[in-house]
Length: 67
Image 1 (cartoon, rainbow, N blue to C red):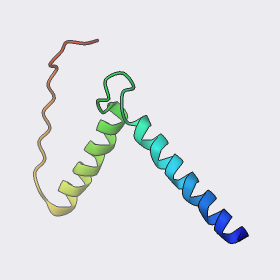
Image 2: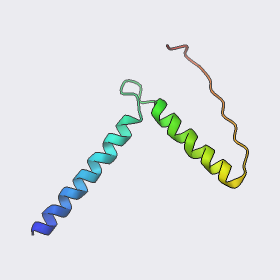
Image 3: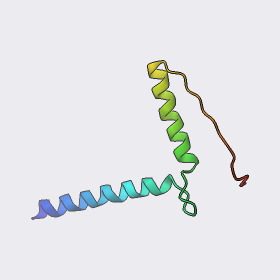
Image 4: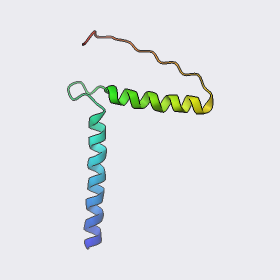
């Protein structure tokens, strides 16, 4: 029974960590991905393109002029 309780606790902690990570990558007001997510995604895609010798193009658009 103690092992089951410990397993449930670990599962809960993993769920909480994933939830915190997801919240850290989105803007609380708009729900849009934030700069942290963008930087991680660009790094991941750059590494993938570099590893396979693929070209990589990145386009940034400021569609709302929000500062």
